[in-house]
Image: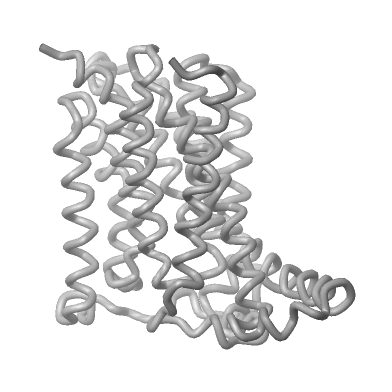
Length: 334
């Protein structure tokens, strides 16, 4: 039987070290043919003049992260500069460090979420580890489209998910207030913030209560929607009006390109795989979540590219969360 120290060491290796090594390999073991971040000296201008301009927090992290790393290398470790530049620009290295930081935080949150079960009994360690490993692989494999915002957005999304579970269990006002803050702040990262509301609605809405005309949850969802809408609208009013709201309309390309169709099939099969692993209650959660995520999915279809599977990652991770949340019940079921 493992001692407490053994459990801590194994947890650290699995939750921190292994995910970091996988992430490191994705950035330095092979080079993306999709985005050329590796050769960019600084944050590109399009980050401040396109739809990316609304992703304020990642953009500031990119600018100041590159400046800080450049200062550290030039002033304290000048002997490492030639070696580092052979592997990519300092902007690329700073992007990797920032993304790795939020990725590891996401791994820690996933470990906590996968330990939750609807029965109140801690989930099996084996189930938690396997589900966690699968989630990490889904995140890492989508890094063939490296950006400065996805890892940050995933962290805030998962933070919103675990706060939702905490609020569901204890109904504490403090947890709900924290959830409001997380949604408001994450709106400055990426539009993924709206999916936190979808997750909250899927978990909290009980159709049996709806039949009894109990709409007490409506106010909570409305407050969360306002927490998203205010910063979302404010960003588009404050930032230069020449900034485009979307990069383009890709509806036709999404259904005629082999790459885009491959990305769509990958996402659909991945979510279906998670759905199949759930019991009836878990399947109900997945259905409700997909329903409340329809506006986001519609936006991806029209103005996003299916080949950028990173856009589907929050939905795939949610499927795995519902698998883990219900798995304890499914295993002990005769």
